Length: 513
Image 1 (cartoon, one colour):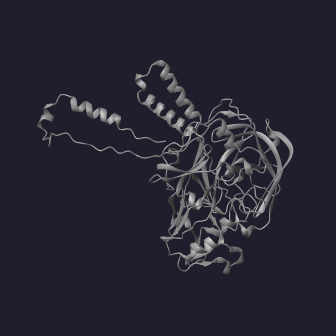
Image 2 (cartoon, one colour; image 1 turned 90 degrees about the vertical axis):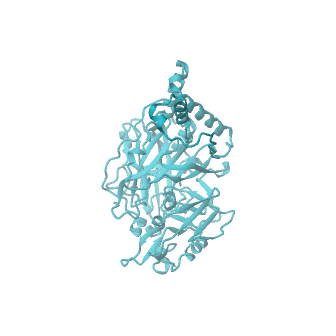
Image 3 (spheres, helix red, strand yellow; image 1 turned 135 degrees about the vertical axis):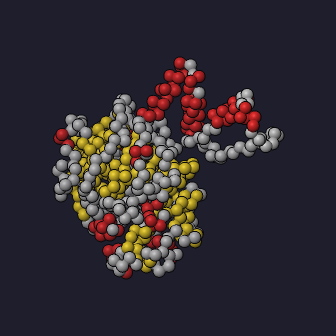
């Protein structure tokens, strides 16, 4: 929550008004002498719908008052303020993101084991399992793998682990160990160690989500084989779709550690930057335990998620507008997964056709190559204006994000980011909203009450030259056992990420560049 306080300025003005006039002041030509009515603006933020929201608001108001008049507090109140501020810092942790494949994949560093072994993992709100490659992995040369027997806190099990993706599969076993992410540590976290990967159809890659739905395309490794510098995937969706059956790490932290039970995501855009590299350290930020209000303006527009829908972070898509034309989209089955692990926007085939029907000269790429089925091309000179509606509000997809680049050397034909996603009738989602949309908003994923919130980005933050150090919020920390009990601890949130030259090479990235 953000508040703007002008009371201090008004007090200063009042003091100046009643001060004795100086000689210089007496020389001023003051126009008018009658009382003036100054209108006040009341910003409507909506009523707090639940007791939890109301309590959080009240707590924030109390802390703001104590902080403002801190010099007048007695020892007991000053101690309470100090303790509250300390707890706030301890309950927030920042995870810098790296951008791989020019906006194809966003990853963050996690540490596993004792002593800690660092790994880059895809940060994926479209699946719920944590898994990393282990040192027995086949065909994993040049990739950082988890050395199980070097960790003194590892607990092995006899349980198998596996995830099927549209373009491949990963298999291995389930273990428990200490995991640190964004400064927070969970002991005995259950996760998968992968020693077998299989690529089944690399050209079908679309990056669509569906990690726990065998046979559906997933937001996991786009080609079925993960490559350096990525070593695994951190699932940030709900436990209901975890193949391992384990409670996702973020859910353990939200339930037992975070005072503000949500995490906020900002993804940097490098597409369209002619100097962008395949690996960019400046990829954005995930803030665990809150949202970073320096990255957005206005209020977050939260869209509630019913308890029965807590699997993917799925919302009802309420409308589509292309080139100023409202497509009049209204159906009960318009369930969209908000997925940080996906590059594209996946949609039902009939809706993809309807979108490109509004773009003059567009044509399906299947007519050019069967392996590009689902994609559409359109004249590169066309600027596309696409808006999606969530929570009764329209959100734009920038032309830079819609245009995936030229498909031939003349630069005449470009490929669009809206892709055909043919979901089965029993699928809980039929739209996948990936980075092409999410780079245009700040997104909050709230644990309780469950919701996804969108806000307009702050001016200037979507700039590849932005100073990422200003995004990092200090704090985070504390050690959580597997049962969710806090054991105190320290923070290393916001530490610098090492420079890496290796890049992920997947079929989708190759097609886009």
